Image (cartoon, rainbow, N blue to C red):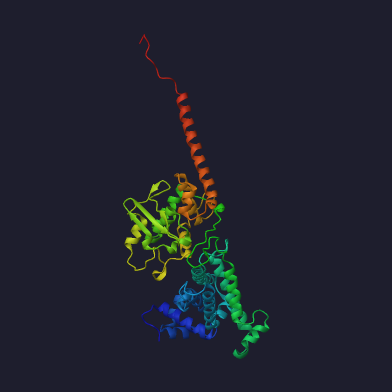
Length: 439
């Protein structure tokens, strides 16, 4: 019986998901969906337009699809070996696809019949699932993913592999008692476990080697310290303040997050490790404990020449004091869980969507860290001291030192030009009149 406490739309989506998954889209009538949801069939057409519109809504609104963790029973990160956690995750994903086989076949088989709007909705649903997979992979693998291959792309590839395997398995498998033999006959994998092992090996192969000092940077929660700083580009003050203004309009948490990125040079991978206890402040200082080793970093109240509050009253302190949840995390995602690096990047993209760099390119998240480093160097910090604060090596700071020197040279040239202009103006003026004996 449908849960009458839910809206009619949600009941229709739930009913459609149940029927599409069990008997397929083709065999399901709109009358069956409406009856199971306990609503009039006219309401279905008013809400979704057609059965394909309803299918698109299922992809974007059914809780089990937009939140894969809803059904998956995942072990807490860090409590089991990484390879075992990945195998467990992939196994449950395939088992879920088994349960949704009729729905998957319908989505693939009837894709050509979708309207443009329905196709876009389906795409958004798949992106939502991809983002959930990316968050899980980040939590398990940490930031240990090959440079140039964002977690979202890795998650998309994993989804393609899983859907491809499910499609191959469903078309080559025979009866249950000979299913494994049928897959072996296909010449791809001896069985499902072999396929999962292949995917796990590939994912583990994306991680960098452990650091020379013995710290395993591929462990969950730890950040790799090998960014390509040569590609980092710092930003001028007007753009920085424009981003801050946009962040302020986006809400307290987003404003506080962007403030921390600009004011302390925190990397996206380090944000989930920040807790409420990581902020130490009084009337004379505001310090953050950043990274797995809790390095101390000052949270600047002055950012690119403009002051954003005081040490005790700024975007971060206002966010922390406004919260009513019990999560110890400094920044939170759904269900008050610590925010993920993926969500940090998504919030950054939302805030900067209408703001372009001087070259016209979209703003990159690492530009906050680059801008902070260059600003600290211009204020007189040595590269050795900045290395301690930033967590970057002296060698990694070299490209940023060059950028700071270039900015300093530009500022000096502008001052010289202004001084020259002032001196020239004085020379061009006629000398003041002087009194004569005849006056």
